[in-house]
Image (tube, rainbow, N blue to C red; front, side, top):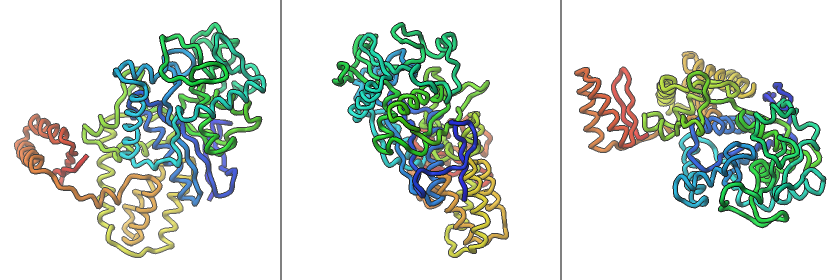
Length: 464
């Protein structure tokens, strides 16, 4: 079955053709571990996970790499501002190494809560300095760099196709709106490959290099780590659309020039998670929400994952707690439907093929998750499908969507007596329509690490 992907390189939906038949190599821009990942960040990683699962469902062997950025990412995303890890260390009174490990651990916990399959490789930037230096030396030998005030810059004027990927306008007025002016750059679009000069007082992470003791620029890190594990020509690179005009444009420039040929065949980007008035969720605006914030309000990681499936990855998705509650309710219904067929054996192969083909066609059409969900619910509501076939279909759908139906259906939890007592008090308050007391008791139950699930059939308490 053909697979179609929207390729930012060319800006069209294209039939996927792997470099090696039956195999696909994927690189995902991972987190900068100076703070908690917010729910907008996490949309990128759910998207990459769905892409991976879709290929597995099509019997591809997938090799997936996601990096951990623990040095060199400046607050502007370009060459201005403080290193984000240094900023995080100062904020928390810790070393940069402590900050990086703390937020890496929390990121890994978020991946687990979202049922995201771990990549085959999760390299840290600080473990791959030698690979970065090697690529920079290669670029220097080929004449693509210059040194100014101790820093090594990539000369974008030496790469004629620099503006093509993001459709940039290479005039100074537009350039200065993109990055702050740096008097040492030949062009405002040039970028630092290696820093030995840092305008802040110190930089805790530094390494020896041919250009002096210093640290790498953010963009060179992804080129080095991706090629170490996937080679200098691989299939797919993913990330958020905010990476297109600076980070991914710079990655393409340095990698193409270093290797002398096309570096990545397909570039895929997910759109923003937005609040009202199309305002993206961002750490810099202090409007970001953590996954833990949602869980404190009774929304599980799988509820949030199901919510994300309701919009196509290439479209902005509006965040609301009302939308999350609707997703939570829908997922609970699916879990119950799964329970209804969970002990059935056997299936009608013809029926299975008809429905699963429709489902896979939706996923193969540029990860059309809204259409895939529609096929899922069509299967649920079709009374002519025997239960054994439904069970097989549910398992097959879930393997791709990753919403954890079997795990949720089979989960057996003991609720502590004190939580059960709070539930009993809350049930009485609801009967008396004392909604303020009901809400207070609900918050107390949630504070103890449990979800409160209200329905027309009563209230269920479960571990968050």
